[in-house]
Length: 204
Image 1 (cartoon, rainbow, N blue to C red):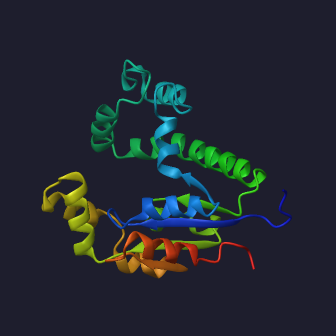
Image 2 (cartoon, rainbow, N blue to C red; image 1 turned 180 degrees about the vertical axis):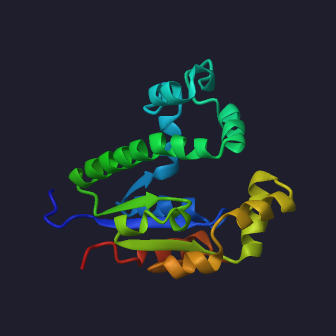
């Protein structure tokens, strides 16, 4: 069935351990198409990914590993030594990610999905996403809850988790950017589902 009105575009974000992935799954259950920006970014530098020929041309073949993927460790060291290399790398990767994201969005819209959910971990930090979506949905929880969840899930030491959280946008920054907030603290899965299913996904 074709929709005369364009699908609602939702930017989904939240700090590590906030439950963002679970909310994405619940939105998919509601019939939204979830487009994972991180997975797309990884795919373009995966073996024989779309960015690889240009990375080889700009940086040299030594940045390609035996599988034909980006040698991440070597690139990390290079970017650390030459900060301008980060801009060069982003100039290759970002347009391809934008293109792929757009293609997936068009596909989902043609397939009749009521809403498109762009799962963007660094939505608030990147700044360029705000104008591309109609609503920003932030999955929020207390910082201590994030810490406990990530320790339980990944077995990381508390200091490491605290560093990861500190490197992301603060709760206040995320909440300031939000149109909708789900406060996912001490909610059961059933309560979380009820919150997600209460969101107005149809364009009014």
